[in-house]
Image 1 (cartoon, rainbow, N blue to C red):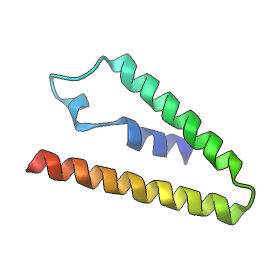
Image 2 (cartoon, rainbow, N blue to C red; image 1 turned 120 degrees about the vertical axis):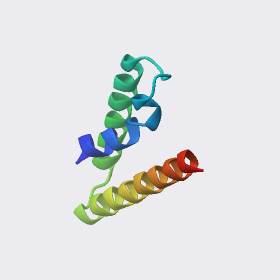
Image 3 (cartoon, rainbow, N blue to C red; image 1 turned 30 degrees about the vertical axis):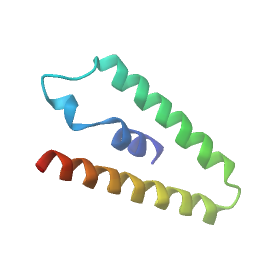
Image 4 (cartoon, rainbow, N blue to C red; image 1 turned 180 degrees about the vertical axis):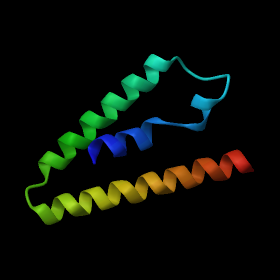
Length: 74
C-alpha cells in the first residue's frame, strides 16, 4: 500500500511530456515519499489509526490528482 501511495504522489503529468526534470529526480521523490509514508504508518499504534491514516492519504492523493487534471485541462 505504501508503494502505491508513493507512486501516486511521485508521478506528475510533466513526466510524460518533453519538458520535465531528470528521471532520477522522480526516483528520489518516490523514495522520499515512500520513506515518509512508512514512518507515518509506523507511528500509529492502533490498527484503526493506521487505517484512518491510509484513508486520509488516499483522499489527499485523489484531491491532488483531480487538481492537477483540472489545471491541465483548463
